[in-house]
Image (tube, rainbow, N blue to C red; front, side, top):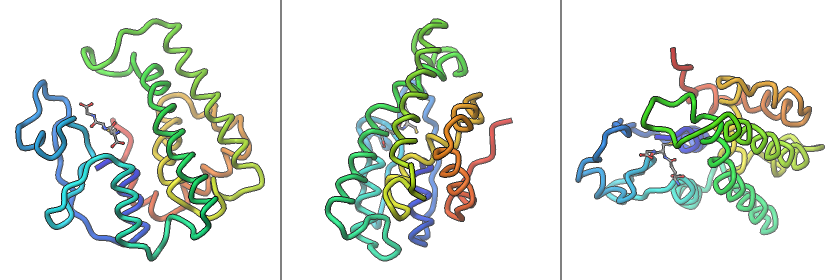
Length: 196
Ligand SMILES: N[C@@H](CCC(=O)N[C@@H](CS)C(=O)NCC(=O)O)C(=O)O
């Protein structure tokens, strides 16, 4: 279950059971394809209601368990949070894949050159510039801790593990936000250890 969903479950004090699946098989099982025809995790099974896609899952959990809220009452703030979640979902992964290509096992990465890898770093840096502006004078991306922080936390917190910690350190507001994220119990308790 990807980290952003585990963070939300922890924030909301919801018990869950994690079922592991091997993402790197050539052909996903028919049983898994029935849960998600696009063969991606996460998939949530809530008492027989099966839902895929992390954002759909986060919104579902928010509506079903509105206490310990991760969305504010204010309409404009909710819209701003959704905008940030879209930015993260639409623009971050492509840059990340470019940067990560040489680190992935053979056969799993797209073709890459030094230029494509460096352009991944440049795009991640530009994305962090946008977050830096959003965070000026704020503790969290949109006032209180919200789904925007939940959605971005896994992306940003792994950067030091892949030689991009410097991109956090260069940006004061992002750095302070990362420190706040790293101190949050839902993050501490759900963080996977770095791969040996
Ligand atoms: N849009 C999906 C993307 C999820 C995603 O990237 N899942 C990755 C692991 S974190 C995956 O299942 N990869 C398996 C594959 O591509 O075969 C979501 O947000 O739920």
